[in-house]
Length: 269
Image (tube, rainbow, N blue to C red; front, side, top):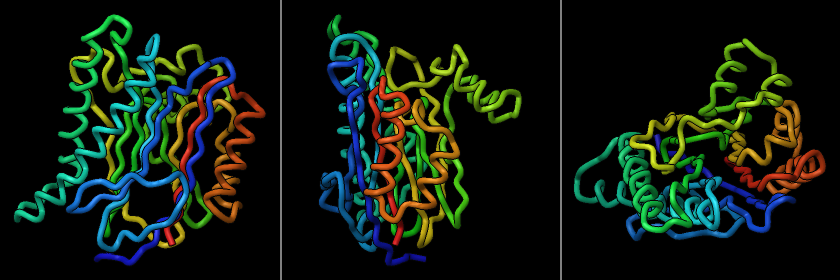
């Protein structure tokens, strides 16, 4: 059943203290039959007659490769998502997750092709975490260790999956959070977009959303400086997406700040 929900959001992105350039990229856009409309870092919009997409990508690679990879991924997403509207208008109703899977495979190949054309961008790659709100449902996809959280009725859970063996060991209960955070292979990703990998296996999920939900999408720079309890506290206690983002960003920078840090907080009203 279609709901008349208003989506409110706030995005913040800062460069790490040891880096001259921010390799994180983010995008917020609405999508309908006219295509994608890129939106500002704060705002509100209805999903009654359009989709809303929020995505973050953390780039990797030497030179300008990381910055290029992350921005290219999000640019291609803004082209791929509106295709579902065009398909529906012609009488074909594609499965949203299947459409996402096809889009990410195409984007993965696009990044690999771009990374093979010049030595300074060879092997460029990036993570991806995205949430896609339709009038009926929310779909998510993630590759790498950029994350998606949901806070509902005071309970916070990670919806995405980090593509590292250290994270899997933590979630299986083999190690505790403190051991995970100190793990020597915590950042060793076995899934990335690009990087010369022949194939890609993103994590997908469909999540029915409801009034009062709060979502967080973030790069691993945020996780470096905040623990799970800090995320849960901010998502539950702060009044607005802007306040939530500012509280989490300040804590992350005060405690670490070495890596690029990007986050978007989304409220369903």
